Image 1: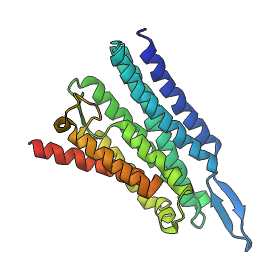
Image 2 (image 1 turned 180 degrees about the horizontal axis):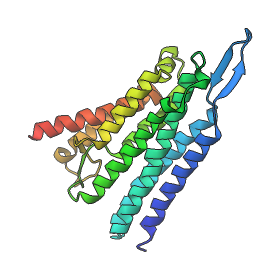
Image 3 (image 1 turned 60 degrees about the horizontal axis):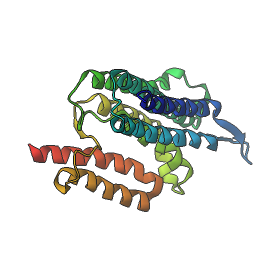
Image 4 (image 1 turned 45 degrees about the vertical axis):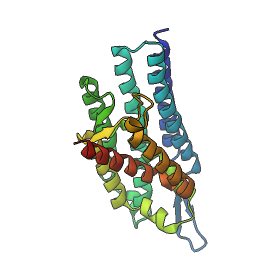
Length: 254
């Protein structure tokens, strides 16, 4: 019975690996337009990576829930969970950003010959994720509040980029996502948020009272409104709201 939560954790890792496989199998498609110009795009199958990362997040939640339900929490389970999270919410999202950077540069003149050095900042995300998780593992005080943004939250917001890319009719939004400077900003802001010590609430319930769960209920309302009105573009809004609500209620307590 004690190994059941670990099986969920390994399933998290499996979906993270599947996301990576999908990302690596789909490079940039190069075509020629009517006037002989280059047409560049990422194959739509990369959206499966976003799906696999989302499933990994669900499984990541379930392994902790099952461990508490079966009273099967263990130090090994904690370490295994972090190792799986590095892959599913660090490496896989980092590769998504790598592919978007490739597409961003490929749209420029001679962009296909861009040095890989311009693409390497994408690996900062998995490095920051690994550092964040290592710090979490040796800190026993992060049960109902985190120091720094949790890695799965970062993984999910990056996973939303392919979905936004293929499900928006806004040319401005597409150009924003494919702007290399915006992508660099996303990489370094998300990496900083992970390794920072900002007080971020954990989405766990101590009890069922309104007072102690007020910030979580506010997040639920914001999330529903953002997803209903903005669809996939609502994910970055939810992520930003998560940070703001966490800091607001932390400062309010102080």
